[in-house]
Structures are given as structure tokens and as C-alpha cells.
Image 1 (tube, rainbow, N blue to C red):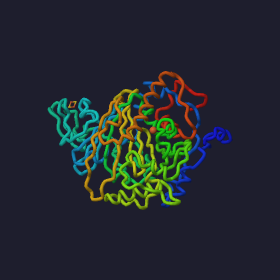
Image 2 (image 1 turned 90 degrees about the horizontal axis):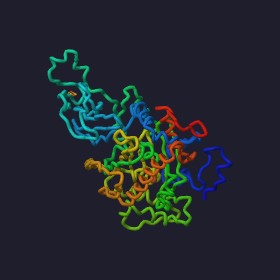
Image 3 (image 1 turned 135 degrees about the horizontal axis):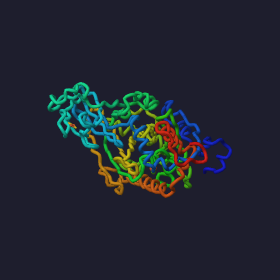
Image 4 (image 1 turned 60 degrees about the vertical axis):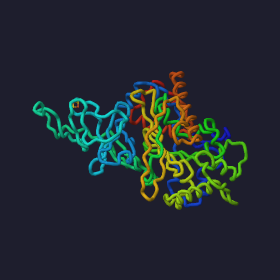
Length: 473
Ligand code: FES
Ligand SMILES: [Fe+2]
């Protein structure tokens, strides 16, 4: 059990949960463990409160719009959302709107969603579809898939308009892992530099060889950062998701951060919470594993003498994928198969690299309201090796009061976990309003990803603090 006295003997940020660590479990992996899993990259970043004004103040939101959303890489869609020339998706964040379109040569272009005549939005927010040419609904100026102006009525009246200069305003666009990323800053660093070291840790194919099996868009009554932060730590698991404690580590989760834009957690499966009072055998753990979306297991699995539940589950998954005609996972570690290895990419996206439950999150302000947000949850599944592309799931929109359990195909066990998470978010936002001044107090280690995110946010927008805690932020 955790001892409250442990932290007193150590410098801030050095204390760790007693008991088995992620690295201890990696020692028992049945495959050689790659360096990126062995890596630990944490340092103490201070312990000052995070002012609530960052979530509640309109000024802060305006600064985020001006200086952060306009300069960061964000995934706009998956490549399979725009498979054919002319297919497009509109990505919106705050006031910004970007059209992402597949060009005739299969490359992908992105433009600001605004006509160069008098600025009219060319396609509706969050829409998608196909166009031959992009025609403005106001006066009919028409652009091709490369963004060039190809037609405008009454050219005789625009002797001052050089057609070549009136193409749509380009937006940076690149791909990684089957995701299409955009950046409104034409001077931005390259996507792959921005993502470093993620592409070195996780092979792009881990996400490329997948398709969107489920897509949920959930409206939330909270600032977008409150929503995102609920998934940046496992500290909440024992209180919020106590049903997970029998088979999932919580306080022994490993946290790392890299540069400004990337941080991660490794949350182990098949290792009970250190706070669980009952004794559990490896077989008990394995039996607990086989719930939720794993209820389709046929014959009961057993843990062999000297083995672990993690090893059995990992092998079960390798065999299941191979039998289903999927990828050869024989070289992947048990950890890469059963654990949550979640990478956060600043400002608003999270990629779970564990192969048995590959999920991706994205958080944005909902419209231009800083007190509401939109949470995109994508569940990816492995494409069959024969190349047949399964259909891309359409987004299923949930209102803030609706349960994840009503989403068609959602495992009710997983739906319950997301309901628990989103329930916390609204309460956190409302509580912050009640407090007024003041700020959120973070754990030194378990909530370092939240602090890291805020440190980077400060680099883009400054502090603008109306409340300053006992120390400098
Ligand atoms: S505003 Fe688009 S054609 Fe006039
Ligand atoms: Fe959670």
C-alpha cells in the first residue's frame, strides 16, 4: 500500500507508487523490449496551481485562437475519409475552418474554407462529400482541387484581379499513421519534427494498417482542456473506474514527456491496482480480463504454471489476429499488445498505440464557445491483410446528456467507462466556476502530463493569469 511518508524523504517529483512498476512488468515480457518502452523521461516541472481562468476566461480562449490553434498541427481526418479525387472533409476549430481535399494525382491539399472574393465560407462546418470544382454559393467564383481560381463571372469588372493570385489560401497539410494533419501556420515546422519522437517510437504502420471501426462525436459542457486532461492521467481510475482495479494498474502508471509537443503514459493491464485489498492470483486476473469487449473468448483460458495473465492474453490476441487473416504480431511485446501506451500530441490529440485497443481522441472547442467542447473518439481496427477495405464508420453524434452506451456497436462495458469520464468533466468545469479565482492543484508525477501541456500552452499564448498561486507557474 502507498505510504504517505514516502514522499517526505525525496525531492519533489521523485516519489513513485510502491509495488510493481511498469519496468518490472517489462522484465517479464515474453519478447525483447524495445528501447522506447524502456525509456523514462520525467522531470519535476514545479507544483504551482493551474489557474482556473485558463478554462473559464474568454480572454484566454481568444488568445488560444490567435496564438495557438493557428500555429499547431492537428489531425483533421483519416486518409480513408477522402479516398478518391474530389473527396473532401471540413475541419473546424474555433473560428477557423479548413477544407481538406484529395487532388487528381491522389495527393492531399488543404485550404482555408473562405472564398477569395468576399470571404464567404465555401462549405459548411464539419461537412464532407465530393466536388468536381469548388463553387462559392454567393457569386459563383470557382476553384479547382488545387485551390486555383478557374472561373469568375464578369471578369471585365475585375481588371485588378490577377486570377493566378486569387487561389484559395493554402494550409499546411501532411500525413502520419493514416491521419491527415493540418497547420494554419505556413511557416510551421514540419509535421514529423513536430511529432518527434513519436514516429521513432511507434511505427506509422501501426495506425496506417487500420480503419475507422467506430467514430463518436460527444458534445461536452466543459472547456476543451478539462475534457482532454481527464485522459492524461490514471490517478482518477481508482475513484472513477473502480471496476478496473482488479486487472489494471493505476498508481503505478508510467508518465513521460518529450520536448514541447509529446507526452505519454504507459498504463499496464493484467496487474491489479496497488490499492486493491483482495489477493488475486494470475488466474483471477486473467478471468477479470475476459470481460467487456473480450467476452467473445471461447474456451476458458488458463495461466500455465509460472506464467502470467498478461502473457496469456497477449498470446491469445496474437493468435486471434493471425487466425483472422490479420497482421503477424509475433514480434510484438506483450506490453505493446495488452497495455495502454498513450501518446498525447499538443494541443488536443491522443493516440493509443497498444494494438488490442487502438483508440484516438481529439478535443476542440465546440463552435466558438469556450465553455463547450467536442470530443472525437475513434476506435481503429486492423485491416485484413487481403486488402479489402472495410467501410469507414460514420461519426455518431452524442449530446452531452446522452450515454456512450447508445452508440451502435459500443461495448457497454467500455461505454460505461466513457460515461464515467465525461461525467467528471462537466462537474470539474462547474466546480471551477464556483471557486472563481484559485487554481487546480496537480500531483507531481501522476499529473505531469497536464502540467507539461500547460507549460507548452504558455509558450504559445503566455500566462495571462488572473490568479497566481504560491509559486511561479
Ligand atoms: S463571396 Fe464568393 S463569389 Fe462572392
Ligand atoms: Fe478514465
